[in-house]
Every structure is written in C-alpha cells, then in structure tokens.
Picture 1 (cartoon, rainbow, N blue to C red):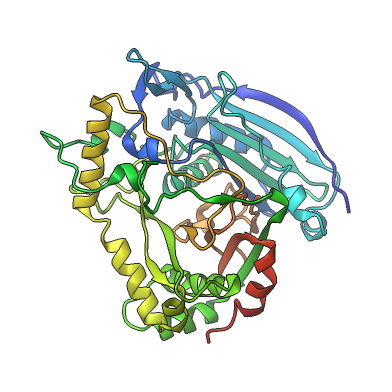
Picture 2 (cartoon, one colour):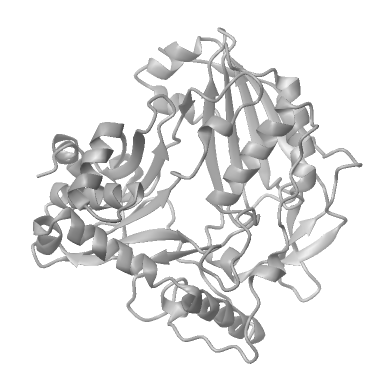
Length: 437
C-alpha cells in the first residue's frame, strides 16, 4: 500500500523568552565535537492512538525543553578567530506537522514501510544557511496514532545527550512544562588540557584522518542499492543464553556484539587470515578524570577497536570474544581521554584542520563493522502523557557494516539489532543469526 504524508504546517519556533538561555554566546567546538559526524542523525518513534499526545502539548514541551538546551535552539556559526562554532542565539527549531492517510498499524505493516519511515523525519541540509540544528516532524495518522521524527546535527550532541533531551522533552509535555531539566552544558569544562599538553597516542590517525594506515583507514564504497537494511529481534531468553555462554562478568552489549560480529564475519565468508575489527563507540563521561556528569549535553564519545583474525573469531568461545571486546574498551581509559584532549589543544594551537573519520553514505566497512548502542536509552521514560512509544522506527542506515542495538519497545528485556550489509551477505546472515554454534 502507498501512504501519502501531507505537510500541514512548517515553522521555525523559538523557545519562550523567559526560558531561552543562549544569550547570543559563541561556543567553540570541542575536540570531541570535531571527531563526531558532521551531519544530521534521524530518530523516529511511534505512539498508538491510546498513548499518542496531542500536537500542542508536544510542541509546547519541545520549546520549553530547548530553552534549557541552548545548543539545540542555536545555529552553526564562525567566531572571531574564524573557527566554526555554535552560535547560541535562540533562533529556534524547525517544527513540521503532517497527516498520513492511513492507520499507523497498516502503514508500518506495508511492504514499503521502510520507504514510508523515511518520509517521517525532516530532511536537513547542513550546507544551508541558518539551518536549524534540531528539526522535528509530527505525523498524525488516520487512527489517531502519532509518529515523532527528529533530525539533529551530530556536532551538537551524542546519543546519550539526545536520550536525556528526549526524556526531558517528554517530561515537559507530560507536566505542562512544570518539570524542566537543568543539564550540564559547559563544553569548556569537559575538555581541559594539561599544561603543557602531552598527547601520548596517535589520535591524528585514529580519531581523525591522518596519512598513515590506521583503524581509520579509507574504505571502499558500494552503490546505495546494494546496501540492504535488516533488523533482528533477540528475545530476553536468547540474550540470557548468550550471557550464560559468555560466562563471568559480561554485559548485554558485550555478548550481543560478540554474537553479531561472529555472524557477520561468517556471512561475509572472509578469508581465514583476514583481520576484522569493530569500531565501538565508547561513552567517555565516566572514564574521564575527574568524571563528567552523566547529563553533560554535547559529544563525549571515542572509539575502541577490538580486532581478531576471522578464523580465530569464528573458532573462539563467546567468553574469549567478549574478552577481546572488553580489553579494547578498557584501553579507552582516563589517560587515553586526557591524551585526546591534549591532542586537540595542540592541533588547535597550530591551527590544524582535523578531518573526522566518520563514514559517509555508501561506505562499505567490510571486513570490519561499526557499532553504536542505545541500550541505555530508557524508552519507557519517553512518555508524553499517554504512555511510552510502541515502536522505534529505524531510518535506512546508508553505511555497510553499521549496527545499532536498541532496547525493544514491545518485548521487555529483548533487544533489536538494526544493521546494514552488502546484499550479497544478507541471506547468509539471516540463516545463521540465531545460531550459537
């Protein structure tokens, strides 16, 4: 079935003057910002008719919440030194309201549901002048269901930051703006270099695109029509069995990543001696010394690179693979974080342009993978007044080898894996993704 989505309203809305907190300041990008993706990341959530809030409450809550998150209400700018920066000018967020000519359940069950999902969030353009950094689309269905789709410039915030914002937005809407957050937004305080700065690791070739061969090497590209998106649901029981096989202290994320890494490697039929690694996003708030508050709003992610030869990965026990993952993540410790901050200061003092290693659409990571985890996202807190969402709707992932773990909305304790693979490997992956052999 074909679902028509008609836009009924499109406006840039500013936070109420009494709540706006930008003040016109210009804030430099941190080195964590410069290492992140320079582009807009979509997220799409659905509520059935019984739980769906009304649009007015959602918009009022949004504007109240962004008043406390001035980076979201601001714009990209240039400071007095010619550096790219955040201009906290309270210019507002883009809000689009739309109507779909179908019931929510029918639209999501249609054979072209993925194409429909891509109509449910704003299509931002980072090159456009005065482009809002947060954009929101509210799509109301014939049945009364609601989909909220957002697009946020990743230079502004990482996944943990946005999860805090989403729950703050929901709380503001649910309480008539009586409950508003006080997030930690001081970017300068989380990236303080030593005197003198003393970087100890090769950040230029790890987090940024240097000249030497490194984990941030150049990758091949694939035609977009060869990159296939798929989703796999792992039940609570399946995850428990994985953890039991891994044994010892094993997190849900570690055992699921070990499993997905093995199955993707087998599906790709890599040569036995070929090295494969996973680029694992690591939240550094609790790893810094001193630790950064969990509600810090910005970017504070670095990457770990667990690496194995294909034959060793496929023949090793789950416990062994989890150990490789755990050891790689553990190396992103307080010394590594401080070294990265110091590197940023050295590069800034030298006026060096740094190019992020973030992949662009069409990138093929094979034989490697990249993974992000939303397992800490508390979906049950995304309650705008009628209850939590009934679904997280993944937009198309445009990068081969990219994986995202998300807590399942419908099945308590379960996990959904959304990933993109070369179409040549999809059938094999689907055949073996539930096998623990």
